[in-house]
Every structure is written in C-alpha cells, then in structure tokens.
Image (cartoon, rainbow, N blue to C red; front, side, top):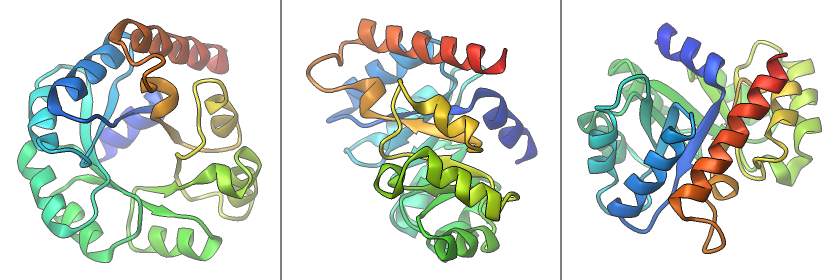
Length: 209
C-alpha cells in the first residue's frame, strides 16, 4: 500500500477512462500511457471494464485500477481483474473494508468537511472530493487542507488539463482528469489524447521546478 501511495504522490494525475466499449477504452488508455501518464483508472461504466483492467495491468511501470465502483460486487470484480486500487464516487464502509482486506488502495467520494472526515476515519487512503468545481474549485481544497492538513485528497469533477496544477498547489495529493483529457467527439482520437497527456506531464514538470 505504501508503495502505491508513493507512486501516486510522485505521478499525481489519474487518467480517468470512460468509454462506450472495451476497444475504445484500451485505445484511450494506451494513448494516455504513450503520453507519459502512469495512473490509469478504468471506470466501471461500460461492459467489459474488468477485462480492460486485466489487459492493461500487464504493462510495466503503470498502475491500473477501477473507478465508479458502486457496490461490493463491483469491488470483488475489480479485485479479480487485477485492479491495484478502487475509487468510488461515494463513501461505502463495506467497499472500504473489503478493499483493505484485499490490500488495495481505496479512494471514496466526499464533499463536506463532515463527509471528508468520516471517509478518512473509515480508513481510506485518499478522499475523493467530487464534484470539486461545484464547491469553489481549488480555493475549497485550500480551505479543507488548512482545517484538515493530514487528509490526503484527490480531486475530480471540474479538474482540467488547463487548471489541474491549481488543485495540486492548493494541497491535493492527486487529481483525476477525464473529459478534459480524453475528450468528446472534438478530440477523442488517440493522437490528440497523447498530445494532451504530454501537456499534463510538461505542466507537472513545471510545477516541480
């Protein structure tokens, strides 16, 4: 678990892969990896997502996990597919306990200070503040970190290729990029996704300088 958290602290950006089918999911994930991203979240929002996780898990120096895990059955499917982490949009004690029993890193969704602290006290590794845009964006993260500096935060929902570094500077441990990275019909071809992934890597380097 410690090694995965170290990996997350180093790489900081999750590529959140939402697709209509397994073929596109693999194409999009491969494009992100080619661009340099090493944290791949495959959302359980399309049939065969577990198979995509199983295939991508064979790639060296990349950590792949399951997102949009809504119940214990999904969590068990994630484990059997080889997921290294589980991410949920909500906080579910049963999912957290199961993930911990399987030695998976777990992040669950919360929004208010009470929800955030409850999730942390249940043993999550990251609290996923979602949707962060709805509550003020990076300034909200800064406020939460001032009050609860010990909590490891991941932000999604309104985080973009253009603004993600603001959330990291505000104190987030990691961010999740979805439509801003993968896109819609405007730019969901693999070459464009790879270019945007490279932009993310460049911005991370600038942030570290």
